[in-house]
Length: 341
Image (cartoon, rainbow, N blue to C red; front, side):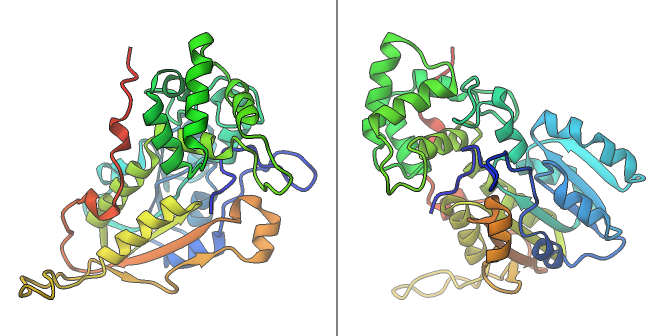
């Protein structure tokens, strides 16, 4: 099930949806907050989780890769009385910002924020004409670079895997034909082509460009790789008893988090054909339900919550495992397309 992330969500009155922290009561309860603890919010955004955590008398280290979020968070830093440290950083680098004694909790809200969607010049939404950009940190290759330079086979894989777009090959070939005549510059350039290639049917619940835009955003920002590396970093930095809470918004993200917690639950190595080489101690223990979704009431009030899923694990005293991206079964999409120059 794909989400409407990045497509320009609107509320019941047709206006833009302001950023509302998803599953907030559930997230706060999962972190087992108490005065004196140190919590890392790896996805600061508009500061929704951070503000609520600070209100519990907890010190917060908050990260965001978006310079605009760091700038917008300065009033909260000033009002926190020294209890909030706000850092411009990717959350995969969270271990670099953890105190020597470790963290009592980490929360990650994965995905693009409503503020980014609402800013036309960031290029996240096809409903707002702007440059075809989509970079959260404003550096590296843009969505326009990918669309205009990547091979058709690479575009097909990106749209098919990251967007689960059934017409990925057809759209990729149409992109190649169009870019030979004129490069893609704006969000409407690309959305308009997709609308022609795969017209919206009456039964369709989402816009034809939704999956392609989501795939490009995930690829440009290496979101799946970022999430995987952040989970490993969390394992290294949480104290025994510390909580890791992750809120995801589509199946690819949730699958990574689920596989991580399953792998870290501890098991015997070997197979039924070979003797057991050693026992693996669990590095995380489950907390509550294996997955928590938003209530119907929250989903109706906040469209962003409709596809949200929360998973929580508690760090044990076992030493961290080695980082091994193979547990996630992710294709090496980061190597696709020579788009420099």
